[in-house]
Amino acid sequence: MRMSQKPKPSHGLTVCPDCAEPLESGDRFCGACGHDLAAVPAAGTEPDRPTVAIVTPVAWPDAPSRDPGSLSTATQHPGDLPGTDSGGRDLPTMEVRTDGPVPPAAGPAGRTAAGSGDFELAAPDPRTAVRADPAPAAAGAPAPQAGAESGPPAGRPAPVPAAAAPGSALCVACRAGRVDTDGYCENCGHAQPRERDHMERELDGVAAVSDRGLRHHRNEDAFAVSATTLPDGSPATLAIVCDGVSSATRPDEASAAAAEAAGASLLAALPRGTHPQQAMHEAIVAAAEAVNSLAEEPGEDGAEHDPQRHRNAPACTIVGSVVADGLLVVGWVGDSRVYWVPDDRATPAARLTEDDSWAAQMVAAGLMNEAEAYADERAHAITGWLGADAYELEPHTAAFKPDRSGVVVVCTDGLWNYAEGAEDMARVVPADASDRPLHSAQVLVGHALDGGGHDNITVALVPFTAVPPGAGPA
Image 1 (cartoon, rainbow, N blue to C red):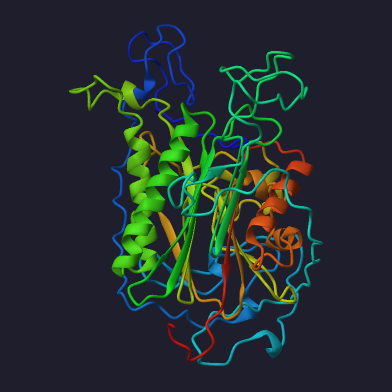
Image 2 (cartoon, helix red, strand yellow; image 1 turned 90 degrees about the vertical axis):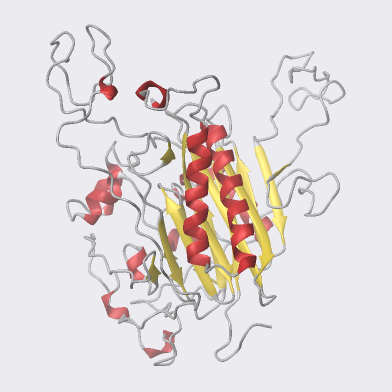
């Protein structure tokens, strides 16, 4: 992730405990004797708080009504949209400083019937998003469908091959030389694309695309998409997107492990009847355990308490979405995001996640508006991630009940840096995204590449079909 770095820990020391050399708060090691300051407990550090257990009943929640006039049109936050949090409580409405006045509330045309319990998507002064013209499909053959003999296991991303197997393929650069077994052209020496450089996957009701971008030497993003059924036979679709922390070791392995573990956890929990919000929480915990295990080096039995083992451990962020029986559930740790884009672009889109980042903390505290916070060089420093050196694991989850159809955009900052606001994202999402999710994901990746492709880019699209009032599962 571009600029998404784990903040330097504050050790609370003014001098080195070994040699008395003066220290700065951000030092990891003593400049004189090399003492590891991470091994020194920070003064006044409070014990970690355990994650609040989810006790949400199996009966899926109805979203409470909310006055649209209380919403901000300049910035969307989870609290802007009625739903429930990880503990089953109403999501709070967060006060956010903006640069402009809030327009008057929309009229009754955009509201749902009173007392329906459905999720109201209306907001003040609805904005009409510019409909994007369908872009040509990305080059390369589409990924194998689920169930194909040569394809990967269900839910795992399938690479789009840029060339044939090494030793027989033509170079993608000079189109003349053959590619040797090391992955380089025998004629021009050009390195050939690796299988994670560009990956695509499409299943019924969900699609995802991941690309290395134009500046990174490898793709450190990963995703898992899949579909399953609930105990009553109704369908459920899920998407998990993970972004490796570039400043950590082996970030590509961290993201891959997290995506696989979270996807497998959801596929196991949903068919058992686990509430999707509970299942999402458990999936994030499973992903964290998978990433933590990467810090376990072979042959280090008996060194469980050695602080050196977890220094700069593999790390990643995670974001995911589950669509099931009229419910939209999101979960995340880090700064990857979920956006809601309705098919009816006359109604506003919204961001459903809140970044674990320095900039988001400044905005939440009322110290800066979003324009000021994200212009700061510290903006993308993350305050939450999965990894053995994470301060504590605090999965965020939220549940929503949209009253209209649309598409859920699950993405890393490699995309949202080029379409940050919800209205910006709605402008670049093709109008037929619900009908052609793979094509639309390709268009969104292309948008980021056209904008400079400074980071790895991963996006998953999950169409959402609204359940008519009074209609039950098929």
